Length: 324
Ligand SMILES: [Zn+2]
Ligand SMILES: [Zn+2]
View (cartoon, rainbow, N blue to C red):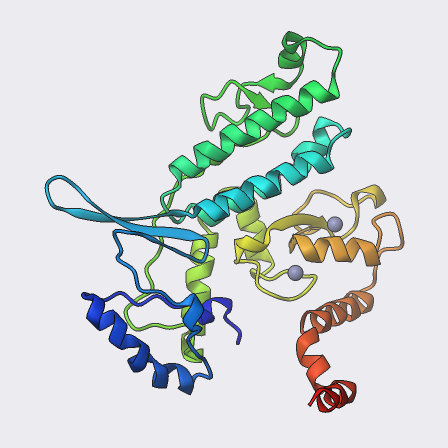
């Protein structure tokens, strides 16, 4: 199925009895779509108890005056994973300089900030910023074990050079600075209208537009780049509006070969595509031709669909027969 979230489902109802009866009521609906409820993964709960869904926690709160509000925020588990991912960057960059750290850290920070900004994440952002700050201080002290804190402070910390905030404590390498997640303005999630469902092919366009709309709330020049490349990753041909995958800037003609920082030469690509691309075509090697790029794109997509290819493979059928 083309939609990864199609296999996850929440149903909201008034009473527990109604919820319980839905198990039976949903069966025909799901069967028609080749789906089944995984009993062990299905649960009925009160909204005031809260529940985790696709990395977010949903919970309804009652105020003293009787009114209520449902809050959505990144789940604890997601926050834990995000911290682990950030820590991994610091560990990988141990011994490298601050330039390397910043260049690896920025896409990760941007990725989470954009993924979370649709929900109430102020606290989550502050929490992550504090965590990144703590790791950065450790990183710098390790990098200059013989220098005083005062020296480190003077060398690396500067006020926000873009004037986006009043922050005076940003790690800067002259050109780039470690941004704060808390700067991300939190935008309200654009509601899926009434009966629209990603299942309906005719509504595909609606969903694409909706994703592009949220992409356009992304602040910097990436917005312009994305539009110029029709919101597609040039290396695999798939959409780049799903931020959870993380994006990087790629120079079609590498900088070391005279490529420029122009909109013509820069493309936004998936991090995973980028890594694979430079394994196939190292920046210092010959510049790949259009034909080579097309072949690499085809191979990459074929690998991605590995499961389906294997099932059609005669060897796979033999294997199944042997097992049976
Ligand atoms: Zn891609
Ligand atoms: Zn590149």
